[in-house]
Amino acid sequence: MCPFQIEKCQVVWSKDSPSEKERQSIIKELKEMSFEIQEAVNFTKELSEVKMNEVKFWLSTEGEIGYTLSLL
Image 1 (cartoon, one colour):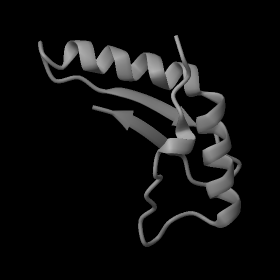
Image 2: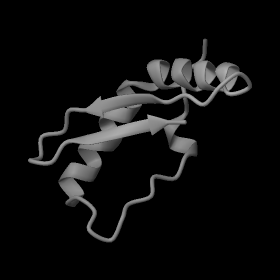
Image 3: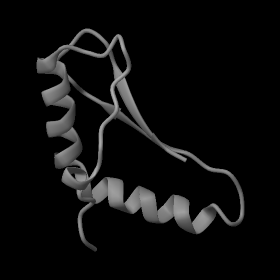
Image 4: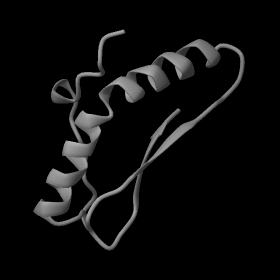
């Protein structure tokens, strides 16, 4: 299986988005999780025809706020 290519995605931050340091930490962690993300994408794609599903990843950034990545 090929890793998910984070570089080809656009990360969208909200108005009250984290600091630049936290953003870089999140992107770094996403890159490190590329195989797991691709596996989750494949899983949700296969099951989406059967029922609604969600795969959620908790990101362990160094900031005070906890972040998650959800694939629906």
